[in-house]
Image (tube, rainbow, N blue to C red):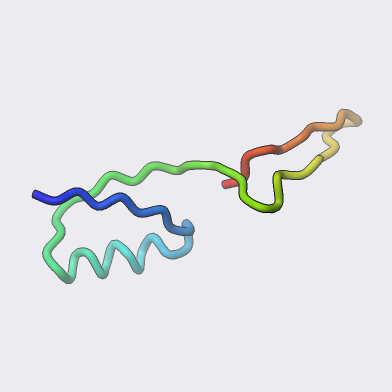
Length: 57
């Protein structure tokens, strides 16, 4: 048994699933995560209140 950890963009999930299935991988667990990089998040206004969005999908 081998464990593979991969962080991919959501739109690439189907391609990754198909590629892994093609080499015999029969199961996987998918978790949606959020984070930030160089952009450091941004500020949004919702119903007159300002919110800082630090983590992005």
